[in-house]
Image 1 (cartoon, one colour):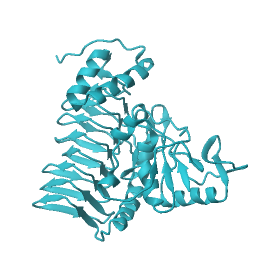
Image 2 (spheres, one colour):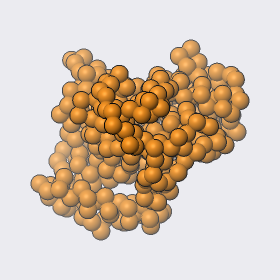
Image 3 (spheres, rainbow, N blue to C red):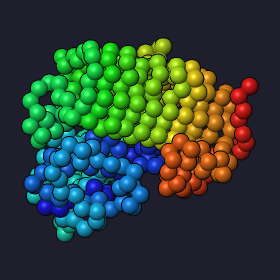
Length: 377
């Protein structure tokens, strides 16, 4: 069987989707495509039709674990699947069953499965799908526990604490009462406390006095300290100082200034709205795009969207469009400055050129924001 994760998601996924195709979004420890790959080993080939830059920008953690998988970069498939389906094993099995029955599936106006040459379409809303970035946080913890156990079985690890080619120095406390802990090719510098489920991915460094709480995913090449809880952190992000990060999603190449802290709970204890949508969740931190930087002692209010390439200072009380500077008011970056800053941050001309492409694609989101420069007082 060959299935392709190429149907339109049909769910608003900003600000993550400005830079990252949905199959490469991280939930429950892995990119969405990786979940399908590990749950369909020896059963199916997963196809994905994306540009080469996305393949380079979104390395797969399962490659570092030596997990065998069948992936094909193509649009040819026997069935087409919505990548926003939450990849619990139960959902994957339902999708495969529908495909084997030659049934296309919708949920209301959303296509979940399109089977090639199928004449039958049924409505089945029992297959859960991501309705917005908040659902990543909602399902992250439970899916993470399931996924770590699947990975452990594939690479023949049996313990609740699994250190795969990792270095641990001194007194590290592991608490697996809520789920397992998997540390892959990483460095932990004591004293550190880690409560599962948690996944610390390749090339990540945990500094002394890091407090990792349940649901934390440090995907790859991150440098972390302070307190982190139920948060997904993509590649190459730096949070090397004190501060709290909870119930949040963080993109690539993000830098948190010392003391940056986010809110994930309103004082009224009411449900959180994200970009105008009531999420139904009481706890939700910010959703942060790629290349974002925060100043020292920055505070980000509950459920804010921080657009790609933004720089934020002080108390952030609004959603920030991509490539803007916020310090009580918004200023838009000029194009030349974007290239300069991203090149300096990533040391990659390809990444800087990609940032310019995203800058151009998101111009309309800054149409009412004055272009200028921000200087610290």
